[in-house]
Length: 437
Image (cartoon, rainbow, N blue to C red; front, side):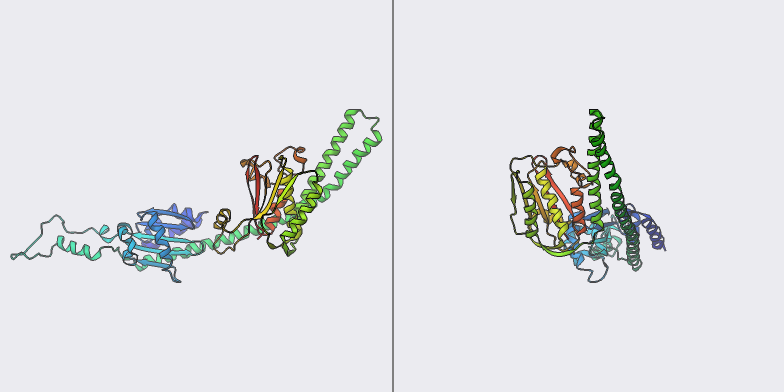
């Protein structure tokens, strides 16, 4: 009855919490009292939290791989003499003679492990240990509280109080409640994602319609300004003509921005035409076009390795490479500009680190890159450069532009199920990394 009372209060507390992990940590006494433990270790992936009286982290980290083999299709494992089945625990019997382990998720590496100390640390002996040793007339040792306590200690050395069936049941009930909470929150998240997807679709549609409809009146403003200069240029003074020219420039820039927004919205609406594409041929075509339009610019292109064939939308990935390579040339003040295009080996530290961020079942991803020796990007701007119309320089500097190129590149990568990020050293150059699946 006591356990049921604790359990109902505990479940009510964690059910109302937004963060399951934090709710468990913030209620340590409930967690310990639930099974009558002195200490508990919470594993949430790489995060480990120790509460109460537990062994040290190094011991628990070494214990976990052994413990994972003990479930064998079950979700709970318990022992009141851990040192007998796991000898390394002998030196930790004051904190971990008893163990009750609960598997929440093997894939997510989520475990709850309760510990109990050696039973002689728990039970208060009724006898007086200071009482003299009793012997009979011929000197034979008599059974007394002191001597029987010594024998009893030898019998229970390395053991904790056994886990009661009701305590094991309470742990299993906790797991069922946690799984239920996780599933409920997953359903809520699914609903939120559906709403976000619907909102994004509506936003794309709005951006498309708004940008399309804005072009006509904007073109009218531009044309009428042009007519005023042609028909009334002699009547207007120099300041009036200059203002009309400024109005035409502004409308032209606005049209460029609207075209970029229109193109961005089309990316979200267009269906991907996935085909096997040889990136060597694709990049060669991109470089031919760029070389033709930048004949007066000294650029060295490096492709250190043979590129992969990937399944992708050829038109969109062509635009992705065009944007990244063009930016590397555009934002570059070096006399000899260098652009390198390639992919990272599987043993590259960046690849290893990136794969650690994914779940265990995630297939290996090829990380492509476009590297330049240009002006670089200050660290404080690295996160914001992918925002639409975000420019780090004046409108006329570095050949102008709308500031939508990297936003479009990010959209293309994300539509292919990949991600894009940048590493940069200011005044030395930038490297854009991306995956396509």
